[in-house]
Length: 126
Image (cartoon, rainbow, N blue to C red; front, side, top):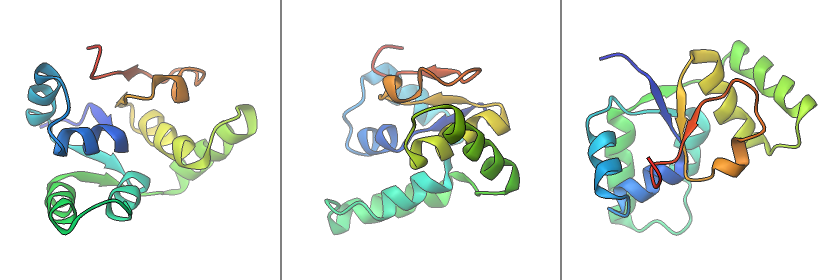
């Protein structure tokens, strides 16, 4: 299965909590899940997570393709931080999507709307 979408941390949390609209949940269920290493770190380090949440997250991450922070993502992250006012975690996620030619799936469209050539979809509006 070809990777076409990168899931933002907030979408994974909403999905695991069964809080996504049904069409979006079905869409994600039919994907080979892919996340940035920063999303993996954010998910596993989520301070509000219960033991059950952590088990769900670990299972999800075990199934997901986790993109590493390699040199190309590092360079693109730096470029984005130089030209835009963007938080480092968001820059890493955006850079990962750009470098690998993926569409980012995020609830926080406003965090990414100023990034040139980045395709973003909001699962709440899709």
